[in-house]
Image 1 (spheres, one colour):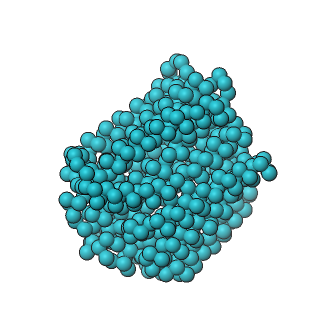
Image 2 (spheres, rainbow, N blue to C red; image 1 turned 135 degrees about the vertical axis):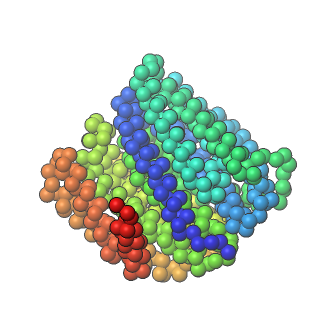
Image 3 (cartoon, helix red, strand yellow; image 1 turned 45 degrees about the vertical axis):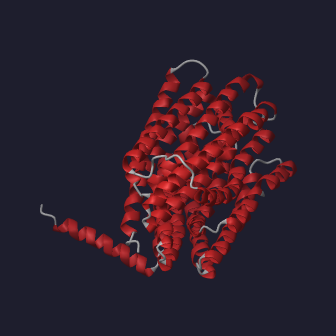
Length: 512
């Protein structure tokens, strides 16, 4: 039986929050400088050209989820021999995928870039440099997955946090170099980012080889395990292909209809969304291995409890940050970027609303992964996500408004959330009606008064920096009060009050 994990989850979450806080500050600064140095057009080109390669991102996510599942499962069973075999098998699968991605990217992808993309002719040379750098970056990231997944499965979040902090520091250094260096800034930026990716991969590899005995490749193929893992990975690919095409495919659609400046607006909205969601993803990163380990240990009560907590707490964390941003979007973007590309505010608001829905299904997907019976789940979810592309294309043809793709994404995300809950309930009895009412329904009911009151309050405040700060504080505090009063259970409130009381008592008893 796996030992109680609440303290471990809390500790790992705090370590990841340290990493995220530093990364957020750096990314907000670097985005502003890079947008100014590159200009909206080149910034959009970097985003959309990299997006062609990132259409293969479902391979990354599929491998990541599969390896974390297998590593966590074997750690839960305490089977070290199987764990070592899993790592070597993962590398063998990577070799196959690496070859496929390289072939497709250098043929179909290269043709699409040069003959179909809406990019000014005088920037095609730079766009091809960006494309080649993006291919190598993607392949290096794919190779790093077994090492990253091993760190997460072992729950060594301190190493993950410190290496990530080094990564954002190197990216900050790139910004200063980009300002000082001459030449084509877009090409230089792509090359420098590739250098950071390679350096961080080598660091992850060195750490894992030193600390985890299984992270050493051994020649030979365990055919049975290879077939099992490749089948699992394959169905993961099917599921994540829909998400990848939804995200990067719609980015390409926007380029075809509106050009690279709209891609710049979407890239900025996605960056803010990623920064906000990273706080939630860090919490989920800490709790997901525990869901798998508890399932592997046969503790179904704790498994279901973790699923509920994952969905509720993830939404609470996201809501506290999203409500102030939604309330002050226009001023926030002006303060941050000064020259804000058209449509950025609308894109950001709609993206954040969609992500609020995403926060509630992380635990559901994890428990299905833990069971290993993922075929039906991945087929259904992938089918729903793939609907984004044709429906968005039709909507853009009819309305010619770039925001149409985001409204469609929100609608499909609602259907997807319910579908995930239904399918997860088939695998593990999560008490479906209770989940939909007490988690999904309750979260929505908490969000509505939070955003309404925050918006009405902001209307009475001046449109300046003091008003912005006051509005953010009021919005976040009001959201927190709603969560404490209506979102948490009585037992959770009692637990928090007891912990605060213990801390205050400990401080008062300290010698002066």
